Length: 183
View 1: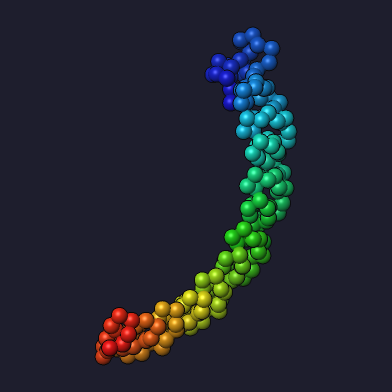
View 2 (view 1 turned 45 degrees about the horizontal axis):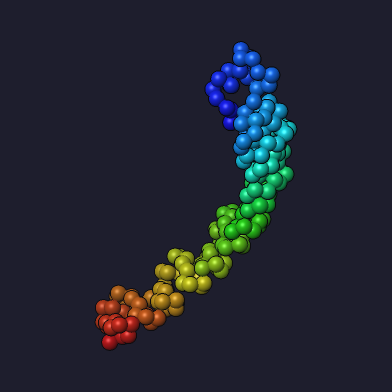
């Protein structure tokens, strides 16, 4: 950050007599041609793309800042997972855990990786995707075309108007549910 717009003119055109063009970093002056201000701390500039990671300076051409930690840039798609670096071309970040990308539709289920083409995530549990209408009932998988989830219990879908009454399945065309009980 420069002291004033006149100082910028000084640095660009040298028409105001100052021995060194200066910026302000916290309460100190510095030369922005050779230093960088990182959250109030003056650091020496180095590298192709000088940048800051908190109060530390680094070269963004070869490193990256991952939640305040400087990590080396590596791979085809350098990314951060919390404070760790990884290659997003071959890995993915699942709730702070680096997992390999695999399958046709790589996805996360909590901290685990899976292929969403053939599996589904049911409340943090990976289940096979099966049936005409794959669905979840709590941590279990089921086919919603033929079954229904009644308060966490899988029940067969049957009758004219399949419905749930608590954890039980019933045909609402012929019965009623009264306060979670069939009546």
